[in-house]
Length: 400
Image 1 (cartoon, helix red, strand yellow):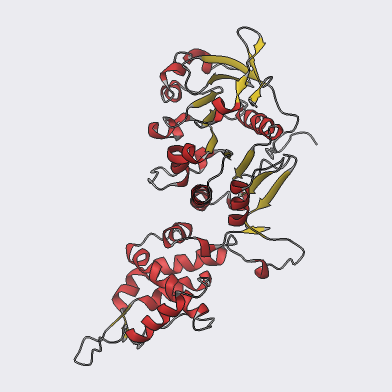
Image 2 (image 1 turned 135 degrees about the vertical axis):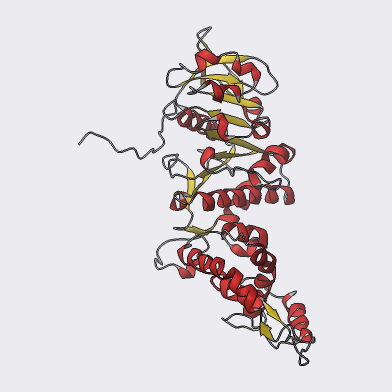
């Protein structure tokens, strides 16, 4: 059965509703752009509510907590009633999450994680894994035992364990090369000490990886967001959508960027491991806040844009200005909904077909937009029919 929006887009030129197939709008990704107050969030909400009537799988990554009113949704707040299981992350992801940038610490991070895994799962110890005066044979034996053991570890010990990785032989005739090390590399530790102190502060401030037993509120059900993503990516939804609220970290832009990177990659990995015959749509609101200036090839958002269609993962993203996205990124979107923009420079960043409406774009009323569908050069002026629910902008009113 063909799924299409019948009354969402009202053509302002011919004064008729413009039927739009859901597949045409989303299958090659959708970018919604426009200045604050132009109607882009209302448009996104209307599309998502329409998707729910079609029983489409929808995952909303909500960095600001605006999408609380969507009915029939599983909504979790990361850091409050849900957590990110670090045991599912690789060293690179953990390094990004903790904002570790020093090359020496990054090079030692995989070893430090491995050491903490040995400490907890092989030696049943709550402490760091000491490498001074430990024989290489003993360490290799522990590594073999780790290969058949659990891989969980205490992230709170990572800064102290990194210190333990900087061990070297003695520099005299008593050097014993059968040991992992006999003394700390004091010079290197001094070089990275400031970064280690920053890391300790980061660890103390983090809530995102708290496990259920770490919570002081035993009445709150805690969810592993990785498990929820797997559930929504591999099982066709009836009416429920998944909303992952990241607003606990709204003031930490770097951390929010990293979380969205990790979560979008988690979507792709699950879909690649467990292929399905139904599409999944990921919506990211206010993406201009959470996209890094330089997007790596393995970035989760870029991975979905480039490879998502092959596995049925489609991206819907909103941003205030096209200038916040690189030309390479904009080129990956087949469909665009452009609300009012504030400058000619912003319009210049859009595809040529939309640039032809330059003057009109800068004067659009609230709720009106130019619509371009994938695989079509036609650009249509439309008015979007709002949904029956509203998003929560948390604006402070002047009314008392």
